[in-house]
Amino acid sequence: MKRITAAITALALSLPALAQMPGAGTTTKDPAALAQCLIQNSGEAEKQGMRDFMIAALQKQKEAANQAMMTMGMNIAMKASQTCGWTLQEMQTPQFEQAATQYGEYLGMQIMEEAMSGIGLQ
Image 1 (tube, rainbow, N blue to C red):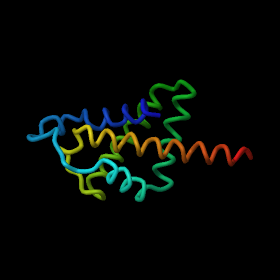
Image 2: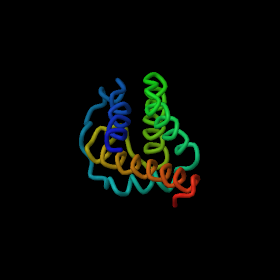
Image 3: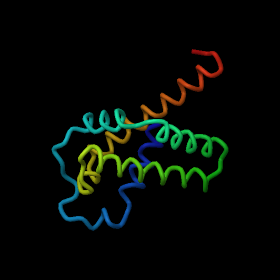
């Protein structure tokens, strides 16, 4: 799961507009608080995005997986900015990567729990 969320974070951070922002790379914000904000403000759409990515990846559909990953990365960045108060510059920090990893792990666990419950194994 860390690999998935790291890829999502890398994608969101690789946008040219972000790379040109002055003062990028520093923040005093708490990554756990951002992860919690993302979790509290996520719903079925976010789970569906992770589900789409996981299914495409498992089926080795590289283009579909890349598209789903790009969409998730953009949605995480938008939610972090619009809902959780993080600036674009702060999204270029290790704290943002840590929060995105925690959030991705949360979504992955939610999907796995639903899948296991759906087949009667939980």
